[in-house]
Length: 306
Image (cartoon, rainbow, N blue to C red; front, side):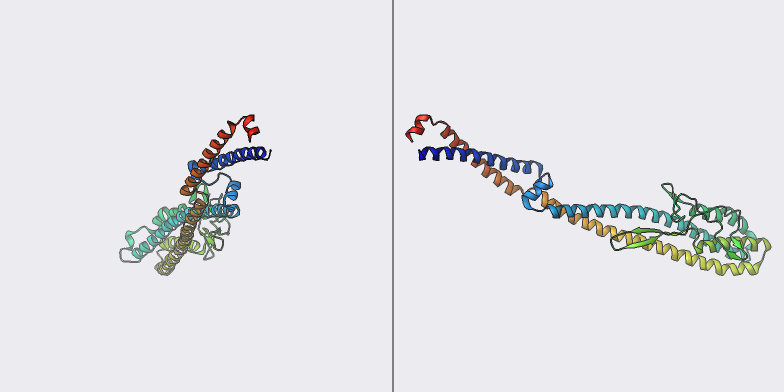
């Protein structure tokens, strides 16, 4: 009787071995075919208990993606503004050159007033009214409002002082959180003092040119020289912001590659190990099936004989 119970127990053990081996083999076959240890967080946890770290890495990766996407948008705005700044600077340098000619012996050959009204001021206005994807870049945070109006028809000089009467935006400088620890104010508004001074200088040159006021024209030379210097410095500050953002994005890219590799190693199948486990479970299955087959051949007589 004891032998009969033992034989039945062996039979049940064989069934259990087959089921366990089949389940384990299925897991190894899934890993080998998919290249991943598991297709769920629970599966990953059951495999190596790393689910918390895995989720943290995925969240970190998403944060990096969010930062780089935002930084990319900021860079697009900054680079567009820098191109506009180049145009404004070119107009200031043009006035500087033409004023030099106006003050020389060849002064009568240049139509300074016409150049300022028909070329320089319209180009400055168009440059400061640049928009990207429907948003005006020199309006501060009032990006739906065209910042500059009527430069060619209305002077911004009131009582001898430069004003921002041409400006319709607000005074808020655009801001960006570049990394967890780097926050920058970037860009510039069209009412910046250097723009006010440039536009006022242009209007003063028109007045002096019409009156042929050599003294006033000469005094404007010092003003335009300072404006060119200030515009160059302002452009450089904007360019420095692009360097900061690009450096942050490069760092993010390196972090992204590292984290992606860690995640890949955590979830990718160790093929040699998986193959060995699959082979072992196959052998167990074959042996169990063989034993089960032998036991299934036994009849009641065999059990009684035992």
